[in-house]
Length: 139
Image (cartoon, rainbow, N blue to C red; front, top):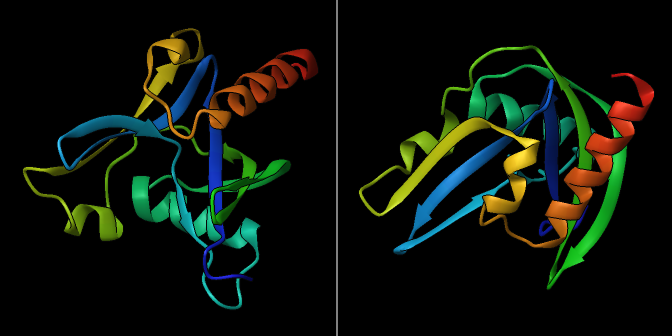
């Protein structure tokens, strides 16, 4: 794996999606949970590890949604089935918290996704498409 590759977690709880609200450098934005793929890991393993580190939620990968190059970084978007619960910030993100660097994981209604400053922008359509497929499959 290229060290710049990352695994991105797309988790639904009913009609809600798991997002990470961020404040960094005075900028507020939202991302999907996830992070860098470590040497020897495959994207699925990295997604499960990153989700547990960042939110305390345990999940399994149920599908590969997309692989997208964002500038110089490849992102693997993976559909995850997470054990229900409220996310609690942990791992390196919790250690890096400061007044100007905050992480707030939480469930957000998919219907309100348009109101979120989600980055990268391509992630919005990946989430919408995955949610529509889950509804169509009865998941």
